[in-house]
Amino acid sequence: MANVDDFAARLLEESKRFLEKAKDETGSEGKTACLHASLALAFCSFEAHINSIAEELSLQSELSVLDRSILEEKDYRLSDGQFALADTSKFYRLTERIEFLFTRFSTTPIDKTESWWAKLKGAIQIRNQLTHPKQHSEITEQIVADAIQAIIDCLDTLYRAIYLKPYPRGKRGLASTMTF
Image (tube, rainbow, N blue to C red; front, side):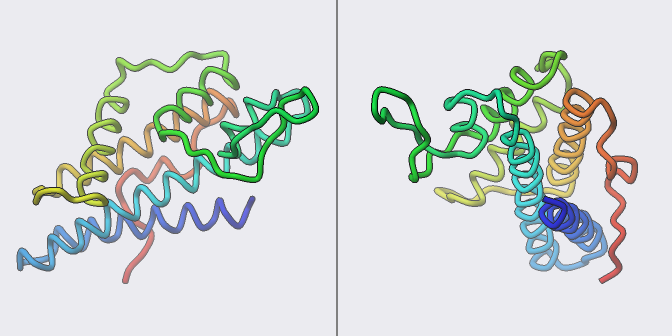
């Protein structure tokens, strides 16, 4: 898991660096490319973080098959009169997995009135428009900055709720450690 955690952190740093590069770009073509890269990498990082948390939590012995199904994104089936995980994948929406993590592994319920939740849901819509385009969508520095900050805030809230400590890389905010 440490390798996945390190990779997820690196992707987040790359995302933040592409946002910084977008701010320095003078041409609209380069700026747009950096913003697209930043947003895509931010969500790659976010999903890697969520997968890492889910993988760690899936090691708990008292989990039900349905719990494991959601954490491991595996389908389940009835086998010899009992539910068992299947070899096939079953994907859940990112927001559903986040809600599940809060509900199942935290004593603190998710507060959907916090600004990061609304910003995260908006960022997911923008990411989906970029990933599955049906029309041209304009992406701005502010949209990408809000998306990255929402991801950081969500991870921080999750870490505090599950691990009872802040997300270790959250203090830097949008400042990248990379210099490329």
